[in-house]
Image: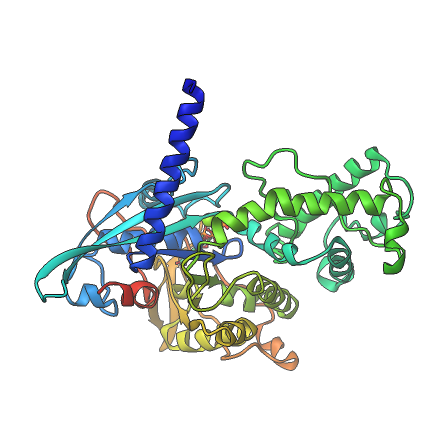
Length: 468
Ligand SMILES: Nc1nc2c(ncn2[C@@H]2O[C@H](COP(=O)(O)OP(=O)(O)OP(=O)(O)O)[C@@H](O)[C@H]2O)c(=O)[nH]1
Ligand SMILES: [Mg+2]
């Protein structure tokens, strides 16, 4: 056997051994894959940093709802790379350093994939009742939020996607966005032979329009294909845009293979096969437990149309996950926790309301999880507490620092316990949720846990039962 073949065989053997060890650990409940899910800017990377930090700094952390912490059974935590050696390690240390720099910075928006394997070492008792130790291995992966919205494409045909985009492009939210290409695309006769120059130009126009949709002015949620915004390492992305004048469905088969419709349909299927499916296989399929992060308060402050779009995006998304009791091979999500993020920006009296608001936003997903016998919960958390509650003239308000580092305080409208009805939206007109800069007193060099709200409950829900 020549050296190259021998190396390949060894690599394959190592991979297979790794896979077998992983499956055995899963069988013994010693290993779990947590899917940290959330649309762009929902707070995934900050959440992962805080979760690792709370476990690493368990001595100074306040985790009274997390049973092994309460029972003094945590020995320590170590970070290992995941077996997939091509996957970069999650940038935990640089995240903490950014948070503790002067002025403090939030972690950068994620542009590529990363992952980490945490080993949580616990004091335990063996079957004979003797003291022993055991390790729980926790897989976590991070990725750009934009990629998530590609998942619903897997269940769609190009025709269905065009229909969906037709409604979106003509809807009120996108009518206002610059360079809306709806009319440009509508002028294409789908049955004519595709001109490569037009395909390239219109793809560029669509990409530019998607970027406008994601700009801070609009921040629209349902933006596909996600890789057009955040390509990661993907090169040579298919040229793709949604036709707006579609032939009758019965005529599709009669179209020639070089027609606009057939060429774009082919590109759509290629995008699914070469980009979305590998992401699903690597990042979504292995998930056993999931936390879905939603910035519900921000959605409330953006108004009715924005909220409606976010709810639709979350509904589409939930159809992409495989809920149900766990299977050894072929993964099922047995537990899902929906969490409203950034609760430090809301006074404590309203936290319960935010939890109810989120439950009403994701009720279809809750029903899905329940139907498939998955366990589900709704929480309201802050991964990193930047705002503090204060009292001014007998009114509760939030105090913190703005992006420029200036001390600020604000009062927010009372948060409703469900998605407002049409006539209730005027209560939130003119209000915009203020984003705070991270707390000023984080020190990376001191063994101090990051300040947070209810991360202990999240830990208990996600792994408490596995920490025997
Ligand atoms: N006040 C407060 N703000 C937070 C918290 N977590 C995140 N944020 C804010 O939300 C922004 C986005 O957080 P990220 O953790 O980068 O979100 P993400 O989901 O990883 O975003 P992408 O990587 O772009 O998909 C941050 O830059 C902060 O402004 C929190 O616990 N409290
Ligand atoms: Mg991120």
